[in-house]
Image 1 (cartoon, rainbow, N blue to C red):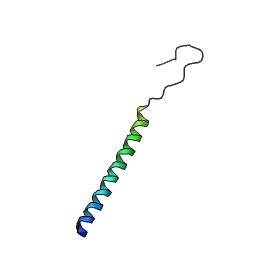
Image 2: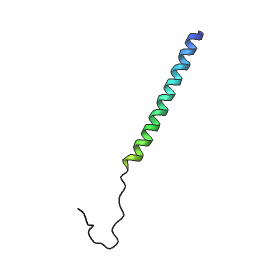
Image 3: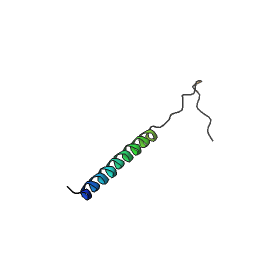
Image 4: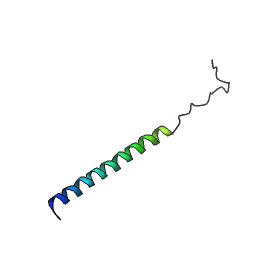
Length: 51
């Protein structure tokens, strides 16, 4: 194996690992946004006033 081939393999591994890391970061951010936040129930049981 020549030095050029070793450099190409190293570059490919670096690009692949960066792509995997980016995909994991994207998936974790997307998962946090997918959970809708609900308001707590009104304590008095009355309907809320809306416009």
